[in-house]
Length: 163
Image (tube, rainbow, N blue to C red):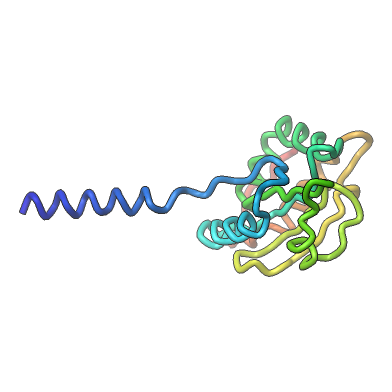
C-alpha cells in the first residue's frame, strides 16, 4: 500500500513539474516567438477567467517606458490590470517587426498599442494608447475606464476605488 501511495504522490509531483506556470512576457524582445507568447497568454487567460492585453512596442519607445513607470507607480491601477488581464509584450523594432503575427490585427497607429483578446483569442478591441495619455504621462481615470470596460465582466459588484 505504501509503495503505491508513494508512486502516486511522485507521479503527481512530476505532472506539476511538467506543466510550468505561465510566465508573463514583460520585456520587448526581438528574439521571442510572439505567436507562441500570445498562445500561452490566451491559454492562461482562459484558465484564469481573464482577458489578454497585448502591448505592442519596443525598447526604443519612450512612451512604452513611461507606461511601465506609470503602472509601477499606480499600484491600484496595476492591480486592476493584473486582475483583469494576462499581459504580453510583443516587440516591434527593426530587428523584428513581427509582421506575420501583427498582420492578423488592425493597423497600429503609434506605440505602445494595445490589443485586447478574450480567453479564446478573439480580438475584442484595438486601443491607441495616445487616447489614455495626459501630458507626458497617462490619465488615471481614462486608463481605469479602459481596463474596466475591456476586462472580463464580473457578476459581483465591487466597491469603487479612487485611482
